[in-house]
Image 1 (cartoon, rainbow, N blue to C red):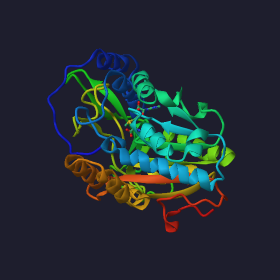
Image 2: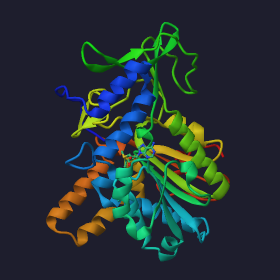
Image 3: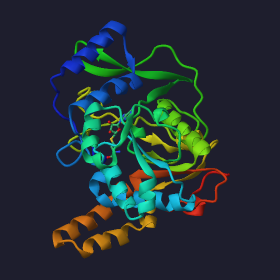
Image 4: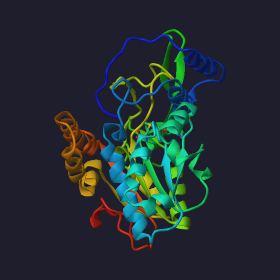
Length: 374
Ligand SMILES: C[S@@+](CC[C@H](N)C(=O)[O-])C[C@H]1O[C@@H](n2cnc3c(N)ncnc32)[C@H](O)[C@@H]1O
């Protein structure tokens, strides 16, 4: 997701938002995680947010090259791992199914690899599942609510813009204490707004965070860490590899990053509950810490470096050979959007996981990019 913040006129609250206000009236303020947990499924259930006409554009929606290069990344690892006869393509939060469709089509270049794969999708929105069923029907995918439900086996897992959609909690530094930020409903103004819990919480910022100062905001994505830890354990036990791609910071730092996008503009995250996406930047250092005890960690590196190393320019030139002049222009524009430092190329980071102790070199990451000591 990209673009800058904008103030929009007040909205008329939906039945969903009114029910949320009622829940707060009855039970009191809710955590940011509870707010995101309630709003995100409602948002995906009631609209298709992707593309020009939607609220935001993700990398697979920018160009087929994104998914194709990830397909080639997976095939290369599958061969390096000795061509296991059965393996699972797992995607977390597949959206429109575009990334999975592009990577599966690319796997068709290596028919024995393609034949070894079954497709497994972790998706909690019924509306999105219906869309994925249409786009991916030739691969007969299976759906799950949570990664833990995916049957045991070697996994090649991809999660693009998934961790940012998982609920976070925020804590604000006041004096020498941390106070949790909550969402309440202001009856006078008729608006949802933030309040701090009166009681402080006992909290030590995770390793790597600077010493906190007044008003610092600490964000914790417990579910994101748990998912990455479980994926790393799966790779330890059954082999395979994973890619987590998202916007966020490589080095941990404080900051309020909860955000919403409406028609490609950043807007107040409490403005229209359930009617707009709510996400937060990913703290990649927390994901590395969650994975490192169980899997070999590669990166995180910026998306531009990853796609360049995988050969996005060569793929673009191959597409351009048989394209119309207009398609050639769009293909080159897509390369710039996905890789330029001023665009998605630096904002998005890529974290890779493989099995510890295995003699495997995932493409796209240089040796010095490995943060793991194993
Ligand atoms: C921003 S979209 C990313 C879509 C796709 N990966 C892409 O790059 O175009 C987030 C996806 O994650 C799904 N999702 C969000 N929270 C989820 C959760 N807790 N469990 C499973 N799926 C979730 C959404 O329904 C949606 O399909």
